[in-house]
Length: 109
Image 1 (cartoon, one colour):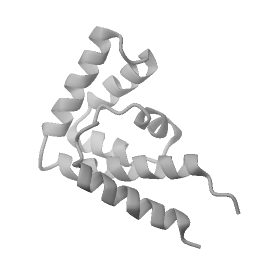
Image 2 (spheres, one colour):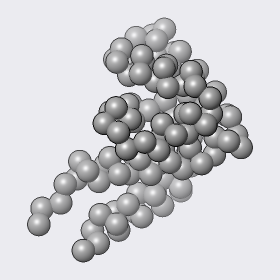
Image 3 (cartoon, rainbow, N blue to C red):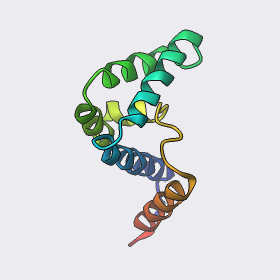
Image 4 (cartoon, rainbow, N blue to C red):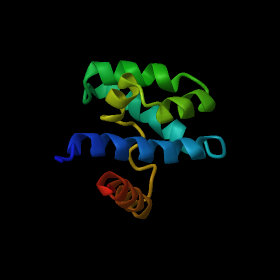
């Protein structure tokens, strides 16, 4: 059976964002950084408008609302996670751990 590598990438992204979501209740720093990043995207035009508009709307919510969105498996959330303002919120060690876990799940029979 051929494996869908695009699906693996989506599952990894969801897992990374779920880890960030877990932290938002205790630490608003990632949320504030993400809001600042989206403002910079808007000012510089460095990111396509649909991502800027989408993330601006999401990040206008409470930390709990943002956390719920980060865990959401919807098509809209999946699309926005392709260009995430939360880059850098996970340490490289954590990121690789999540990547390995997702790869094992993906390759499991």
